[in-house]
Length: 145
Image 1 (cartoon, rainbow, N blue to C red):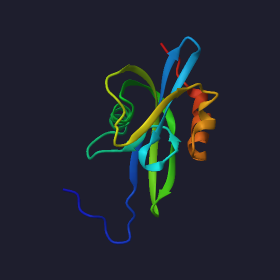
Image 2 (cartoon, helix red, strand yellow):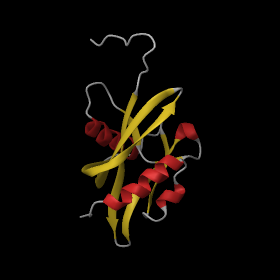
Image 3 (cartoon, rainbow, N blue to C red):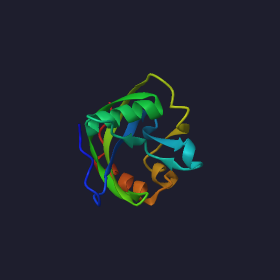
């Protein structure tokens, strides 16, 4: 059992996600999601770590839950740190390759998803920090099978 942090200490939110790629005849595409609670906002899929879960396990689970796709890890893509409700949130992202669709996006969380080219995707992301992360991560994008 974990003890509560002493008064005055900040709890850091840990989250993980992915830049999920697929190969098409027209070139690579990246999946973007639209979250129900944020209206028209487009983002990269991500979510909080469950207790005892590794960053990588959380990233793969969140991709499966939010997109319906099984994926494989293909390398570290980068991270972000920002404030949420006055406290810090750390999000780590991995490049992933979509393997197959085994379900549907979580209907209580996701209103839409779309596959976009690496050229178009940054301009569709709502948050500047995610656009910056993606633009930087494009240099380490994996070769797709």
